[in-house]
Amino acid sequence: LSPLEQRAFLAMPVYDFTGPAGTIESLVFDPALAQAEKGRNMLLAHYLNPVSPEHAHLAAFRRLLAKCRENNIALIAYFTPVDAQTGDAITQGQFSPRLRALAELVRQTAQEEGVAAMDLLFSFGPECFRTGSYPAEEHLNAAGRRRLAAHLAEAVVAALDAERIAREF
Image 1 (tube, one colour):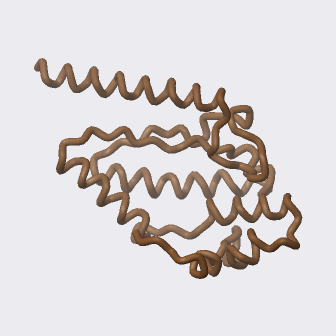
Image 2 (image 1 turned 135 degrees about the vertical axis):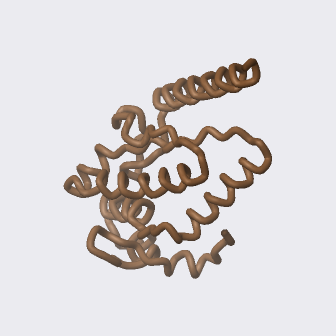
Image 3 (image 1 turned 90 degrees about the horizontal axis):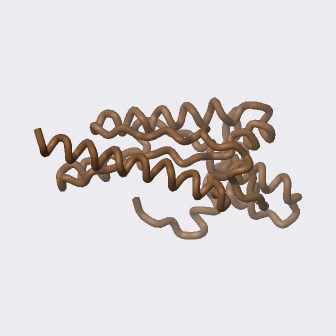
């Protein structure tokens, strides 16, 4: 992936559930928009871009997984928890199915490369996320971070135990 210049970023399309809805500049950075509308539009901009198996981000993910495998790097992949309940409230229930479909595409990509992904996407309720100007986000508050750390620690211990057992036999 290569960095975008600001003009190209601002001109990127933002999609809603039916197709293109505008650009990043018109839907997120327009000073005339109300804060709630900006929040909803940021949700759309971050989570509703169309993704296909050929998408550049998935190609980069495949390369990363292959590099880890080539270099004998054990990888623990996980889906970041997202405040889907708030996302569904904002989008009349359309957020979670779309997010689930995107996650399935990433999960399939990882599986093709022999990597399992721990699914924490819908595991945390709204009480685990910070509150602010951006709805349905993946930014955890202190309680959410502790909970995520516990899940990841458990996965690391399990991976180390599996590696140790494999070496012994």
